[in-house]
Image 1 (cartoon, one colour):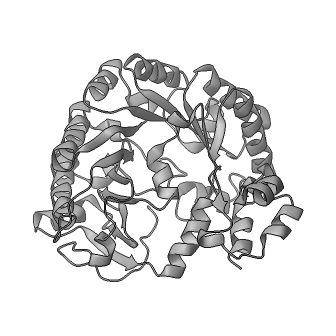
Image 2 (cartoon, rainbow, N blue to C red):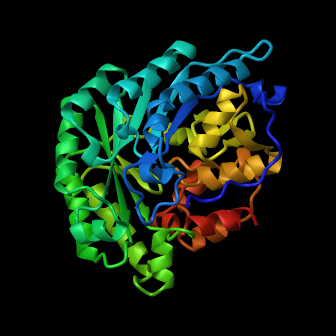
Length: 411
């Protein structure tokens, strides 16, 4: 089953936010995340809030069919919440439709969601609008319809080019489907990103090299590469516990990360976040950069998380409970928390150090820290950048040990 929601304080049924959260609304980039929780099958490693259609039982087709209306209903609620008093909903700079498999919905439904955001809030000039997609749900006609409807970018779940690795991950697509999906998206004029996973049990270093080479041969704009994490409660975790497959190995994953960075950099893609490489700054995923920089976003859909002005909240997880809250005229939020100044500082360090720009040493959350010299000596932080530019940036070794860097910076 999907991972549990965190604890928190009760969220008001109206969704109303404290005045302090709205005070700076519009001074920071604003994003909208739309969570589509449906999948054809549930992959064994996945602990996202997703549901294979058979899990929803009889009537699931009706749930999927009415889902867009439910998301639009939450966007109506959001527009009202962000219009409290003198405030107005800011124009949306980025939209990210994730899941699940958003492209299980007809392209016309995804376009209707983008149009709904534009009508309620307005899209900023040059807004980035991304949808995730599984390669076997992509068609040329669908990609064209999305592009004509305002989608600018597609993120394809490639994961691997090696059949036995895909089998272990319980991915259902044929590796050849990735090339067809990239061609369809390219033909529609969309930017294309590929998501890869490394460290799968049984994946050799040559298997991983093959996946990287295959991705680069498709000449995409962006690559994300994530180490496999065995999450509690997943089928993969049960297989590891029973000894059916080996647990991922830290040294193996480190070697594969170093290989990814070397191959992607040589091909002209530059890292801009620990797990992400882009061909140019324009090709970076601006929506995700907003998360890492502490921007504001509204997350709509079952289990979606939101953040506005230091207030974070999360929706109920199950599609049925989500629909029932909205039908009753209530916010679907399950709980929320108001972050303290210390929590916001810690998160700024936790997320900001992962970016290629790093964090300033003389102002902001790192001002006065006494840990930098030791991090430079240990090869985790770029010395010239820290001493000359007064900017903390991770080295390659620091990227491998980013959590260690954060712990030392925060004491």
